[in-house]
Amino acid sequence: MIGTISGTVRHKDLHTIIVDVGGVGYKVFSTTDTALEATENGPIFLWTYLSVKENALDLFGFLDKDNLDVFELLIGISGIGPKTALSILNVATPAMLRQAVASDDTTYLTKVSGIGRKNAEKIVLELRDKLVTTVSDKRGDMRAEGDVMEALLSLGYDERDVRGVLKKIPKDLEKTSERVKAALKLLSNG
Image 1 (cartoon, one colour):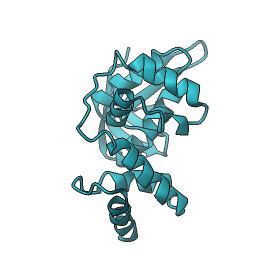
Image 2: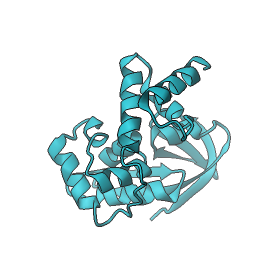
Image 3: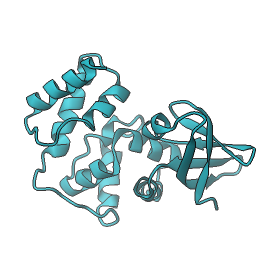
């Protein structure tokens, strides 16, 4: 089993990174956030999961152990394969998933292609005992973030740009309208 990989990024796109380790290029499937943080010709360290199938060996890489741990929990659910788990982590961070499980909210999960309401409810139910939940006093945080994301997407902004901006919005802004205004200002500044 390959637990980590460390090397130089030789190529990247939105879903994969080619990591050169001693002259061998490993194709690593990753979340969009991980791929965006990788710098071509720069060093990288990834926590990895090796998926073994009859006709393929697929390597999945994550910048931190928490993402890997949640990924492994997701693929442990019947009907959720590695590519679907990666798609889930593209839509919802581990923190968002924890909050979704704690509040029985399936909003983010239903945005993943191929996951309907029933599958989303199944994921939340199965993760309830496995995923360590740390619920904040503000149960509406995740829903508010989802509302901001939907508002910006409806205005025509790219999902990748919106996800990046959501991380930069000051935490002290509580109202959705304030968060949308802050996001718009960040998006317009480039």
